[in-house]
Length: 220
Image (cartoon, rainbow, N blue to C red; front, side):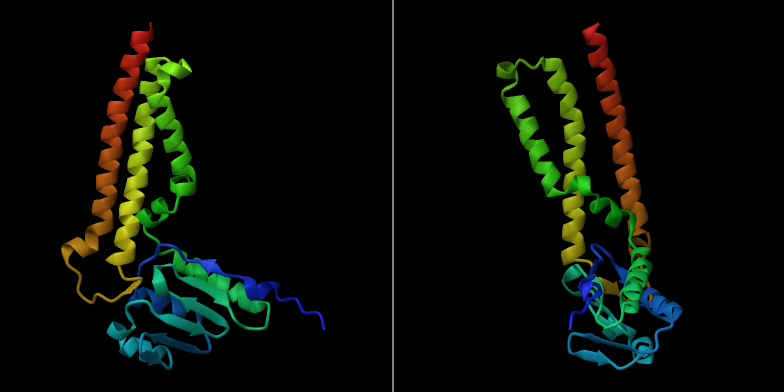
């Protein structure tokens, strides 16, 4: 018998995400699943009450089974997918995925911009290297190459920032964390990071703007 299994292949990639145990519990309570089980390493949770009463044991990279939805935070590249036989499982998986992604930080979303992927960076870096190295042979005026240099530097620094955040997320940050009392740095880390990046962009934009004006004046 022919069977439609397209919904069984659905998988929603979470990407970069760090969420607290309490926030995850709130999502589970809002979605009101009939059955919740989970495991984290060698610890198994039979229901939502087990999770609430053992929050510290749940922190890390747990796997959760919610009715017909499977949620995994393993390897820092979690995913949400349906494992039931009904099409409604795919809808439930998508709904839970959307709930989780609401907790992505600014830096998580910034680091996932497609323009900062290796697929785009290396061609741009190669083209810029050729322009700077073979400018005279290619007949490119020095003014043009200098103007292109600053946007390229900004793009490279953004790519470097993405790489540093990715490394931090994979090696130092828990996908699901439990911090009943947070220090000042932990509470305000995202704000500090965003402020630093905003300040850097402002300084860079100012330098780039003045540099461009100087180049334009030189042409005339």
